[in-house]
Length: 111
Length: 113
Image (cartoon, rainbow over all chains, first blue to last red):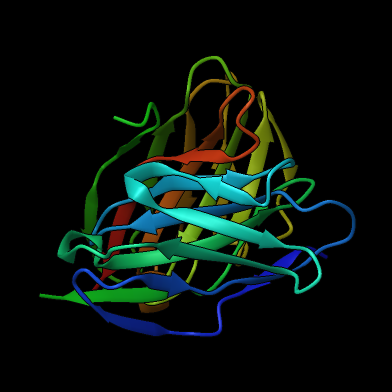
C-alpha cells in the first residue's frame, strides 16, 4: 500500500534561514507525491507535486521539493524562510482510490 | 476560493445528536472524497463517490457514519448519535482535471460537547 512518513513533528527555523521539511515514501510503482500546507482552521492548500520529470520541483510561495528515488524521499525546501511560512505541512501520496497523508510537520519560523 | 465549498464551517452539537455536513465539489469532476482530520494529525480517508455511486465505504469509522451523493453533484456526510470522539475537521476534496491531486474545501469543524 502507498504511504508516506514525516519523521519530524516540529521544525523551527529563524527567518531568512533555509528550511527543510522531510518526507519519505513507500509505494509500489511510480509515486505521485504532493505537499500541502494548512493554516489554522483552514483546509489544505496545494504547494507542489511530483509526477514525473525533473527531480527538483518548484511550487507556490517559493517552495521547492527534491524527489530522490534511491532514498525514497521527497523533502520540502525553501532557501529563505518567512515568518508567514509558519503552518502545518503535509506530505501525501496518491493511491489508486485515495490520497494518503503523513502525520504533518509543524513549521515555526521565528523573527 | 478553491472551487470546493463546504457548509457549515463550524458545528457545535450535543452528544447524541445527529449532524449533517454538505460539500459542493468542483462542478466538472465526477469524483468526490471525504476525509476526517483530528487535531495534530493528517487527514484520514473516509469514503469516495464516482458520480452518485459510493465506491469505497469500508473506511467509514462506524455504522453511525453515512454519506450520500444523490444526484452526482453535492454530497452530504451524516453522523448519527454523535460522540465526543467525533470532534474533528471534516474535509471534502475533488480532483482537478490534469492535476493528479485533490483540491480541498475549507472543511467543517465539528465540536461535540
